[in-house]
Length: 296
Image 1 (tube, rainbow, N blue to C red):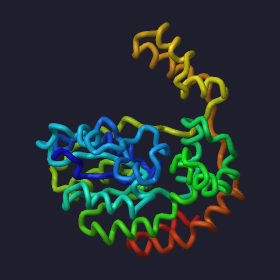
Image 2 (cartoon, rainbow, N blue to C red):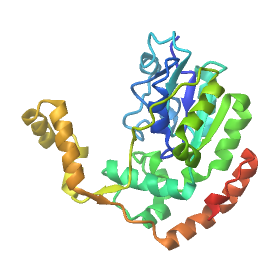
Image 3 (cartoon, helix red, strand yellow):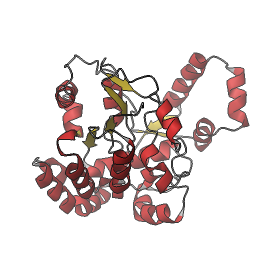
């Protein structure tokens, strides 16, 4: 039965897309074309919350069909970490007992801001300021079944209990990467991943960057145009039938019709530091890692 045996479970906006694409270069690993199927949680958190998610087992298996010759079959649904009880239960239900888990962790303050800007950039629903979104994110999530878990900007960064549950269940089959280390020395961190997986170390091409943030739309119309699936977009596809030409036009439009995201307000950063402080201290002890740079 073709199913994944290596999961990158989060956290979102912590380098998972880069890791996923770098690992795809290794001959022992098959990475699914659908990076984040979220099959292991979709049916229980609400099928409408992750529109591109997979809910049927057969569709999930089809992602890895005929790939049993690879030592590892990989997917990277970043919301798994946010729902550890559901994720762990279904990993044990559907996947092999020796399934490996990778968790990537980023300073939760920076992760929250990056997560907000990502959702605002790619989701038509988000129209609040960062400060208002922080205040309302949990109420909004629990009262609207169409709200993505990615919009729980504060909750996602409370890593301690999530990581603790994965550590208790997977122990030696769990590997943790700190975002700062991955960004500063990607090859070194990839070598550690290879050792964890007992596969040959290789020289990865880490020059490409994925899901690069830091920008926002200038025009609400253009944002809606690129994100919607309406008649205007169909006309655009008709007028420019070649995908390479559409990609070129989109790249140039984004370059000229976007602006740099402003920095987080000092007061907001201070508020989030107070919110996360105790959780970071506990996480540091749990992992036996110095995370003091997150407390500054």
